Image (tube, rainbow, N blue to C red; front, side, top):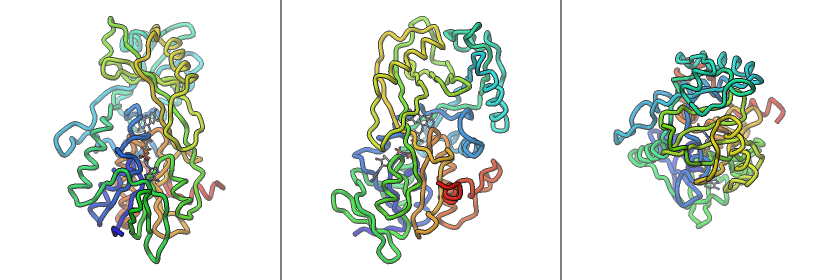
Length: 379
Ligand SMILES: Cc1cc2nc3c(=O)[nH]c(=O)nc-3n(C[C@H](O)[C@H](O)[C@H](O)COP(=O)(O)OP(=O)(O)OC[C@H]3O[C@@H](n4cnc5c(N)ncnc54)[C@H](O)[C@@H]3O)c2cc1C
């Protein structure tokens, strides 16, 4: 049996970012089921940092996290780069665009309202006028994250501080023995610690059940991305992340190709999500609806799970009636861009340190992330 102060279950962005913080306070062991890290949601995202998503708590955590993304990794590599986000609206989304602009304004001082021509100057293939795009908001405060580099950097920090990240360690049993959690993996290895951090993404409710803790009713929702060749006459490299003002479609450039998403949210079990033909076809149809592009050949496609709480705000907090069981769950569609904030909140809540002043400054209180709010809401 290996002993630790903190056991983290799950080696996605949530687990590695929290573990990197906790290693300063005690021996930290992170257990990841897969043979590699970031295999599930954290390796399948669109890797954007922007304010066009989530409630104010999510936007506050996104704003707090900015400093981390702007600081280079320990080996000097950039963790993100500036890359604008363009929110587009056909006539029926104009009210939605107004609302989105008002919601984003407290978090970004680099918003610009554009007419259709100005939007088309930035993304020349947008279908504008008539029932096409009539207005847009450009946010120059958005960034493109380097998800792989972020996760590598966190794992390097864990190692540097004497912590351990163990792949191929699928947790299959969890028991409370005295004041410790004892965790057994599929290979029969056993680990023990007084604090267990449940950062298993779509599997968080399953981990809770193993531990005899009341699940939160988390809902994994599948989302699909297609990749296709850009027309040779278009210089797509500088195109922004382009998303409809109301959730329907987004598109972004990636290594000379375009990625597109139909903003699907299909309820799923926790699983190794795969794209469905219907959602792939829907993505291609939406590209052709919002732009003058034709999707002739897909280079590839993938799907991942975005896992939500009932109120779509993530959870960072101890289970109310079970000592030492910490929830780090429900990161939904913003788990990368909020990871530094969630990790800072986790460190403060687990070690009893001060609540990060930066989170308070951005209007994020511990009660916003607490488990109790979900139970009070009758969930
Ligand atoms: C298509 C798509 C686009 C997205 N775009 C963005 C974006 O642009 N910006 C953004 O911020 N977010 C985005 N997201 C959301 C983001 O990817 C997630 O919020 C984030 O990755 C969740 O991280 P996680 O660590 O909680 O989950 P995961 O990355 O899924 O990690 C959980 C880990 O727990 C492990 N695990 C499960 N059960 C066990 C067990 N029994 N024992 C040990 N380990 C276990 C799993 O193997 C997994 O590796 C997107 C998501 C998708 C799917």
